[in-house]
Image (cartoon, rainbow, N blue to C red; front, top):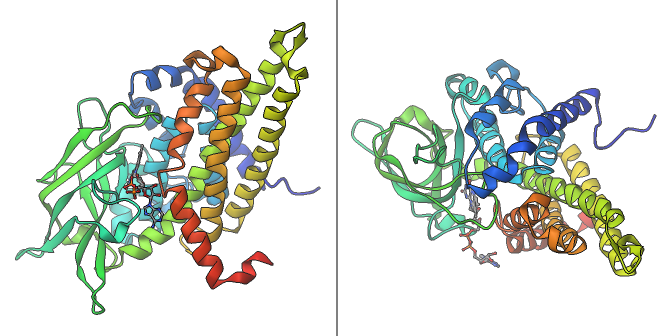
Length: 399
Ligand SMILES: Cc1cc2nc3c(=O)[nH]c(=O)nc-3n(C[C@H](O)[C@H](O)[C@H](O)COP(=O)(O)OP(=O)(O)OC[C@H]3O[C@@H](n4cnc5c(N)ncnc54)[C@H](O)[C@@H]3O)c2cc1C
């Protein structure tokens, strides 16, 4: 029998079915309310730990499920077909924090932190962006300097941090993966290092929970403040100056899973418009019979199928913890995110006035889809990276 590229093993199929059932029973019923109220469903989130999803790609020895990039894509696709905001909080915790630590942390750090983030007792996030710097990451201005006791003193602000606060009272994330400047290297280039900052460290606080977002409102986004924050030497990840390799390895998985969210959004939007096209009548016909509606459905189908195949093909080729997949992690995110936004837009158009209100879901997907063109790298940065990578390796086009 030919391999099913979307569920290449029984384990993958099982995880898809498990998440799909969980979504139907627990995620879908709360999605409208949490989006409307701009609230993060912490309790529901913690229950993902019981299913083994919060440590999906972490080693089993530390409480993870030891699964691969394809499994990560499956989970993000399934969650986002219902609640992309909730899925984004999942991505920030399980991909940006847990996977990063699992790949780049020391054995001691993994033993100390992974069990509690894998079971959902603690919530993690990753802080790269700053008020003045996003794409131009080497321009970040947060600094860490060693004090006489050998600890690091961290100063700076981080902006747009998903899971940066975990409730409505501004309670900070339990643990943050922070990038900060620790000097310049021998060639005069900015040296960036990675730190694990824990709730309760003096000088670590939430500046603000960012409100009135267009979409992804069911995930918390916060500004974090580090004001002479003391970080023990044991909480530096890897060597001083090794953060760029941490970033590069994890960004590829981040982009892949953001693209998987786009696939989930597209799938749900397509289902909604396809169903509605049979239900609605105008001028004595079902609207499916109108050529312009056929164009919306036909183009959405073709784009959805193309993005899904490209996504799962890229996931299949990806080895977690190894960089070298940027051409396709950027390629799939570039294609899928804009296509998802367009497919959600077509679903709204096909559904007329009903498409424009919350109860019919697609307006939320349309708002959520826009973030995917910005977060984890803007579409312009993907265009830049792809062009650069193809200059280095023109034969990629032939492979
Ligand atoms: C809801 C949400 C959640 C987020 N979660 C996180 C998180 O958990 N952790 C985190 O660290 N960050 C997070 N971010 C930040 C996100 O990654 C950044 O917003 C993104 O990287 C873009 O950075 P910026 O907003 O500073 O825009 P800028 O980098 O300032 O870009 C502004 C514009 O200039 C363009 N531009 C910049 N440089 C170039 C160039 N060289 N060539 C062409 N065009 C260029 C950009 O494409 C964009 O159009 C989140 C953002 C949002 C909105």
